[in-house]
Length: 124
Picture (cartoon, rainbow, N blue to C red):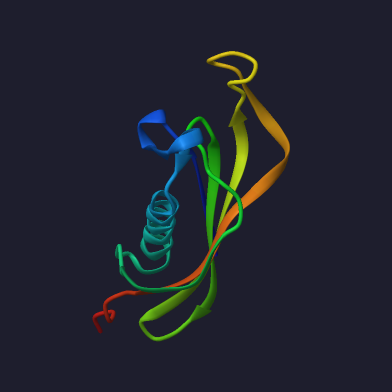
């Protein structure tokens, strides 16, 4: 199973110079797609147990549109292991004008991670 969300990154989330967004923003989006995976698979929002192998590979900036996906790679009795990826699919172009932006021909992989979620034991 794979779940994908797209989100515009508002300028209110810029945390550093150059309109950079902190890594916690993307991890929060990983939590959102993990929640949908749990709802679709188990009828419950589930709980995050851990992240591992988090890699920040490219910057996420305010004005970006990012696509965040979670894919189930392992199913245990109560646990689900997920592979996450965040890709920048559109990017602001402040060098052209304050509101200029472009859709990228090739998305930029910004963040990857592995995570484990747990869901309650099914009744019955």
